[in-house]
Length: 137
Image 1 (tube, rainbow, N blue to C red):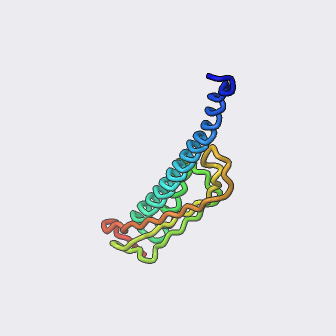
Image 2 (image 1 turned 30 degrees about the vertical axis):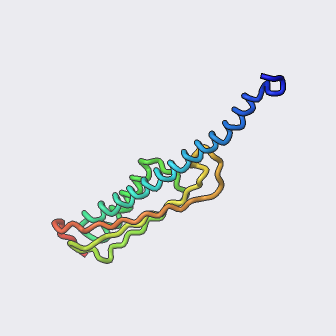
Image 3 (image 1 turned 90 degrees about the horizontal axis):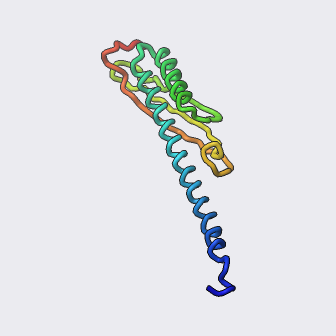
């Protein structure tokens, strides 16, 4: 090894380490976004399922809201704002109930990278109202 090449290995390692670490942190951030999307999907499904077993439209609204709130709280999701919309216009035995959950997240809360901005995650779920519950309007 000549004198001019001494110390080049640590320099090369330092130059390669920074992009590799940035890529790993980006992969972690992408994984957390996918995980958060799955959590919001699960909350919407839980809300629709809870509403579909209620006996009255007003009970369905309350049951869906409670299920969504409990699901998001259990997951510890750092939503800055949550909007839950429950559609019970076809609430009858064999009809449907729909739930839409919207969660506003700061992207910097999701991973090790200080990424600015927010991301809105929206999930819809529809469930058939239980035909054996004897739903009332």
